[in-house]
Image (cartoon, rainbow over all chains, first blue to last red; front, side, top):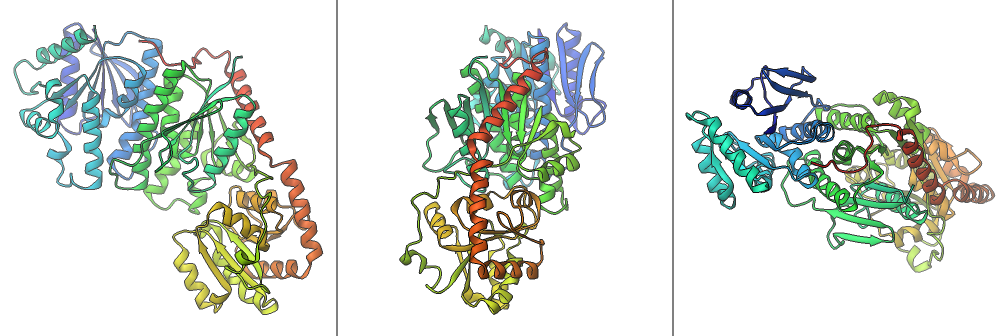
Length: 204
Length: 406
């Protein structure tokens, strides 16, 4: 199975837990025979490399000055789209696109219209949980993106029990497609593979 | 090739009119479709305007742009871009493919660049003005961000269109764009738009007394338009020509400041700030004016000057940017030094004193409008650019013109 992961953090870029989670997920999937492609933001790297069997495509933001995280993620999303488009054109046959956090979800909003590839959206946390100013206009913009991406995704994955509960509370309409894959649980990758299989079967 | 299919993106299109861009896109698309180009135009929604409109071989789609909250204008633009990008991809899918994507200004850069890569089509951009030019430099992160988005759009474009040589020079200097990638295609004006309009006495009396001569300014009330320079010229003009009356048409965040300046100069009774006026009123005002003045400090093109020329009113412009290219001094208008009230007051007085000169200037101006700034010829040049781009790109294996299959 060929998976494309979109992430704003991937080693050596480590900002928070996201980097560890994506790295662990990619490595584990690769070890289990998945063809793993990671499209990762990194301001200091560009191009492509194979790391332990994982194909990593580094993208940088073409716009370096920003006024808030949303403008940063928006301009970066074009670079994700560029790599995804190149993959779709040059190496077709992607089975699942998996976006981590709202910041990597933006390219999927239009890509959903372009190609019917199953899409999994992961949340380690939500704006509601991590930001004391989540009621600010910026907080609401980010929450809008979280909600919209959750509505478009085939499966929404929460990586902690707290995030899982919060998604249930905030977005009760997505409970049916919500899955808990605890980052600290014993069978993280097996549970994620189960999610991938569910989505693949649904798409035939 | 079969009919040329162009996906055009613009954040303004009537009835949503913010600046000159809406008028530009309206006339350009009208004439492009008249010469057989199929257009899908994506723009922002507007209260009362239909979500989708079919105009001959053009489809206008207005995308949702107001519902989600955003902290600032740039964030609003980028959120609107998400919806526009989504609709763009949907449109390409429905159509089966496109030949060109054409973006107007940084406000649609993101969807244009995404569609370019997804569909592998050449991107053409029109840069109507630049942030660095508008702000007289880049002073904040916000301005630097917009500047970099503008650069990004030009970088991703196969060809960049500017409306004047001045703008071409600005784009090549600010963004290091190779000059052979930048083309000049001017703005245009509809020469017939003033047909049937006159200046009825009852209408004129709302703005000036019978014995007064109207000096008209039309434009946004923002620093780069130089309205303060025009106000500064008025005491001297009124000293020699007490019959002069300045009518300032437009809105902008400097309006209160300009009204305060008029008060300080003691000319408030001789200045009428109309605020925003509708199209009909504006056309009549042009017909009532003795002279139209455009004292800009920065002007990439100056479409209002063209409108004044089409209306048959003599014009005075500052010697900057696109205005400088439209006007030939003493032939089809008068040029004055920018940011110089003395130079401007002398020109206004000179024109009011010389009705023969005024008549000659306006006749020559109208001739230039007809010969050079007509939308049909602009649309033909734009279509030629599309075709040349496709010819240049034709051997490129990257080119696809449709969405990828899975």
